[in-house]
Length: 70
Image (tube, rainbow, N blue to C red):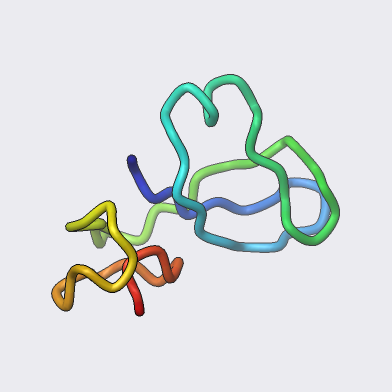
């Protein structure tokens, strides 16, 4: 699953989320602050890659969403 870095159009909250492509395209991801669904991608020039689907299983994980951290 990809990690998306998004910003909410309603409240300007920037956040990362691990979600399926279909969840993003279907607007099933919501802002954690205001619940808004109008989200725009944030382009940082770096790749957020989750190397493992298991929590704590990948010491090389570079994501900041916490999905791989023990």
